[in-house]
Image (cartoon, rainbow, N blue to C red):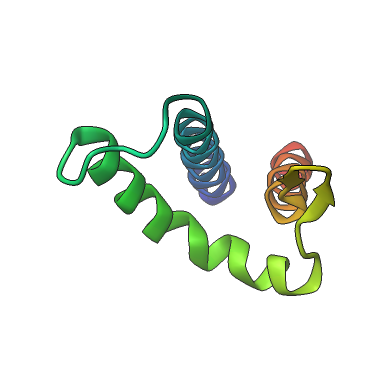
Length: 89
């Protein structure tokens, strides 16, 4: 039962990471959100939840620069690590 709860919590973290990815791409595609808008508030909340998880990994693996954009390797590593942990559980 405890492993089931841990797996569910990790699933929720993965979903929040996906939400962050979608919101970050919305900024790239649609531009920054207006202050006080739903998208702006959602991004603030999701950023506060995910940044403590991503920041330590980002210190070890900085974003990979490729031309005019960068790939956040910390996001990829954390997402894959959670997937592996969930599959082991």
